[in-house]
Image (cartoon, rainbow, N blue to C red; front, side, top):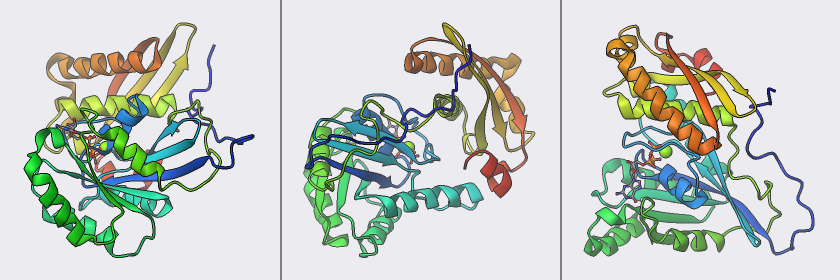
Length: 314
Ligand SMILES: Nc1nc2c(ncn2[C@@H]2O[C@H](COP(=O)(O)OP(=O)(O)OP(=O)(O)O)[C@@H](O)[C@H]2O)c(=O)[nH]1
Ligand SMILES: [Mg+2]
């Protein structure tokens, strides 16, 4: 039997009988690439809804992670890292982040506190501090497991100088789960009174198909170097749910002929590795056996061609 794999994990919801004090809001996770936005989202949601890699520009879409309890629903919006880039893909990614910020009820502006503040981080804080957006701004200092405790207070003062009307400063470690509960409590204070937007049973708005594509892309990011991961996309061509397994066919799209043999590897070894790792992750996520077929297609400079980006939902 084939079921509709396009169905999202979070259908829109007609709330009934909720307490009038119930709170619900959109919280944008914003920051430079690689600061740990997706790691934080996964930690709060308790499931891998956003892929994470040590490379910058991992997230390309707006990804919702829904955290619900009896008093509140926090709809986190993970965004691509804000960066400069010459390709149309880079510009689209940054636009996704700014649009999410405009639509949010609360802004979480994240930075990597284990490294000195660079010019890009300063520019980003200044951009959100200029009063253009009215929402509360919570500055999240991440990776405190790797940072020197004595540097945290001076760092907070430095951010406060750049953003004197900031709402709060919360040091955390998203990876280790340190102070993440404290951050959620701080966010809760600023949510508007509103009925839940999503069924509290759901935890993301992505379809299984979209997640499958992202899981393949994560393995490409982890396995490939230099420009290749940034010039690779993934499309799911088939997603069929059978009685006790799911069959998936995915195509890895590369931006030049040169990259094709590199992704395939000697005797197909790299593709095999990407396939095995993706399958393991998907089986854990979907809770059933997964058969995955992968192949590679060349679409020259897809990342700079608006019609191809549109086809890929980017
Ligand atoms: N030590 C440490 N590493 C972290 C922490 N949070 C995230 N990381 C690591 O930082 C890297 C980037 O994490 P991501 O969550 O992908 O970062 P991101 O901000 O979503 O990055 P983009 O999607 O590229 O914008 C990964 O290697 C994470 O494991 C943390 O609290 N401590
Ligand atoms: Mg990310």
